[in-house]
Amino acid sequence: MGSFSIWHWVIALGIIAIIPVIFAMRSPPPGPNRFGGLPYAMDFVTAVSTFFKNYTNFSTRASRSEFWYCVLFLILASTVLNVIDRSGLLSIVFSFATITPTIAQNTRRLHDINRSGWHQLLWLILPIGWVVLIVWYCTPAPDGAALTRGTTVKPGKDTVEALEKLMKLRESGALTQEEFETEKRKILGSA
Image: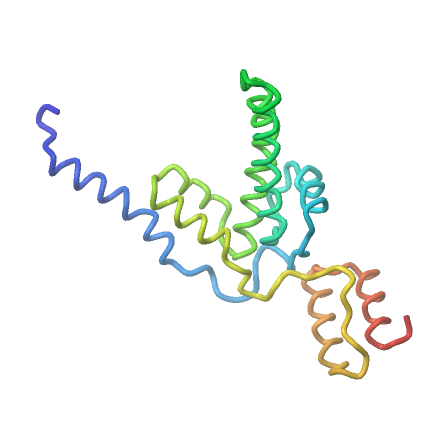
């Protein structure tokens, strides 16, 4: 080790270990989410198709269900490719083909908890950075649960409150005007 003593190593590694802890302890910016409206909760097939449709989308949000279903898909696909091709070539090609959408989806998942996508770089700091990111990926959005497509509020049960929530979703960009009108008709009972 030369003139670099064990204490120098302990101090250097201690500083490296403190960096992810500092990021983890900082709370996200207060106020509404700066990355857009609430994302939709998804099933497995929808999540995988969205994963490939948003191949290079680094700007919106991804719900927990979308994120974890895609993680499951990537693990299953890699396992099947390793079983089919023992040399691992197919798995390597698949990994290179999915690296961009994986980074994009990780960014969108961090956006859902109002954090920057650059926090993914915490993966480079073992093992504390990994733990911090896994906890963040499991954290629900602070502004509410993900929206569920096709669900409606029963008419007569706090209709005004439901319409106000619907208006907020439209104003935040989570719903298009067409989706807003459809849901409004369902709430008012004229659908």
